[in-house]
Length: 134
Image (tube, rainbow, N blue to C red; front, side):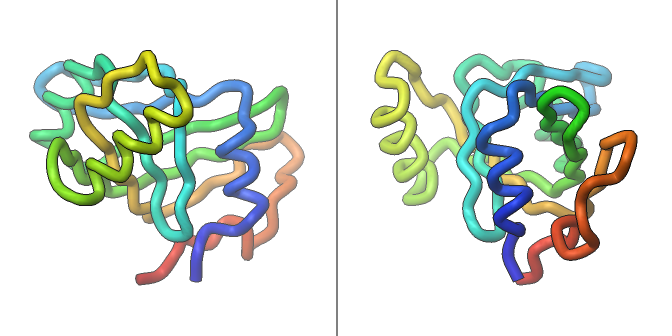
């Protein structure tokens, strides 16, 4: 099973996205400017995430919220931070095609563990909110 096309579309097109971490730097929430949604993971890119990176070293759990107007989701995920290797190189090359001015310091690979509908009227189906299985 992979992320539903509805959730992928919401993540890729949301007008606002924010990532929350907790660790030595305290609770930290940062805006997310670029995102790549794969079948079973979500890639976020470290351009200047110093506090986020420090928190991730201590606690590999994050929450990602994405929304447009009153439609959105919260995704809880386990995250791996990469700054080298094939996956990082692929990510850096992708960023280069999307925004050549950005320098990719690291790749955050999010593996969703729970997806929540944060819409007042609950617009997503159970299938949309199902997490990918490995």
